[in-house]
Amino acid sequence: MTSQKRKILLVANWKCNPATLPEAQRLFAAIKKTVPRYNNIDVVICPPAVFLSRFSAVGGKLGVQDVFWENTGAYTGAIGSRMARSVGASYAIIGHSERREHMGETNEMVQAKVKAALAAGLRVVLCVGEKSRDGDAAAYAGFVKEEVSVGLRGVTKQSLGNVIIAYEPIWAVGSDEADTPERTLEMALYIRKTIADLYDRTVAQTFPVLYGGSANAGNARAFLRDGGVDGLLVGRASLQAKEFGKIVQIANEF
Ligand code: 13P
Image 1 (cartoon, rainbow, N blue to C red):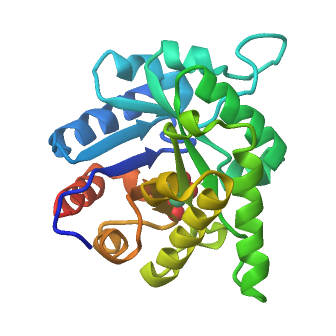
Image 2 (tube, rainbow, N blue to C red):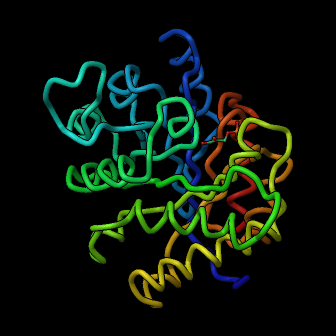
């Protein structure tokens, strides 16, 4: 790793938590207190979309956990990218494995959402990751390659500057078993190689990749030091202000 400070991105994915606005406001306020502003770290909080407008009034970088592929229309329950943007989101998580699993999202749907979010001026955190590491390495690597290739189909090189890929092996999400930094490094390199094949080597070299899946204050340092990633996508640990604050402090070491 170079001695030069690099910009680290920490994205807090609250998922469907907490249950009420007052609880969410307390958590947001506590995180804001424990997350001092460091120049080399971007912290993005992604609360449930219904809370976004309340938080944007308070300040800080915000993201939405999903967007629909149309901005408006007869799509009951959907949230358009422009809506999210207009209430303060500057990032959108797209293609999270939980949406792929529970809401049946396919790579093609993810692709449509990525394009819509980029067109609306959101930065996209595109989530990819294999279901299991059993069997052939070529099979699970191929699975991730397909998610990246289809998810980014039609995204221009210029727009790619607003895309970040979060590598979240599904078996590590919500489990107690994070990946190892060594394996994450391999996958981060593989994802950048896929980007090089789709675009070119120059963009691939600096292309941001995050790790997600049971990331916490105990393993954050190892991932940021040895995992070849530019930051973390944090689930459960982002629901505890103190724990998340520790992760931010650790990120500041890099
Ligand atoms: P956990 O950190 O709770 O495993 O969740 C990871 C995740 O899915 C973040 O998007």
